[in-house]
Amino acid sequence: QVQLVESGGGLVQAGDSLRLSCAASGRTFSSTTMGWFRQAPGKEREFVAAISWTWTTTRTNYADSVKGRFTISRDNNKNTVYLQMSSLKPEDTALYYCAARPSLRYTTTAGGWDYWGQGTQVTVSS
Image (cartoon, rainbow, N blue to C red; front, side, top):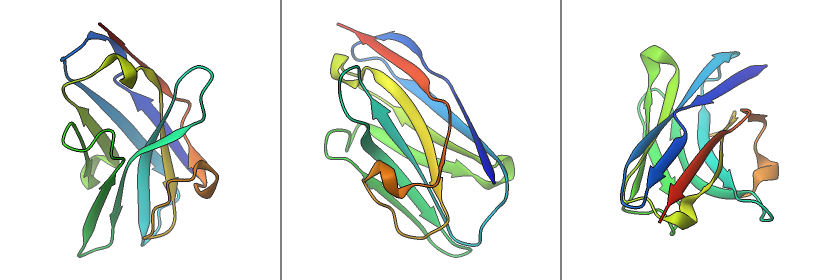
């Protein structure tokens, strides 16, 4: 079992930056993908970014809506994945979830992820 705990959400103004953290604990896998999803009220949960790694390779993927503004990264020593968000827009307002799956492949479908955190709220005012 894997436990994921998000933090770092808050209320910011348009154009501001914010960094989300996802601390992972529990079972580890030799091949892992972790990602961020978000869900706004009345909308489906949507893919934001993913990071996959082995001992020698790290890959990142982003939704088109956040490319160039968001950066996903990881700190193995802290078992933590980050989502650095810059140039935030009101449409980025959502509950942001961390997710994990024991695979090198990512998927943009929420149903394809095995583990989820409880979410952290990001609100961007105009």
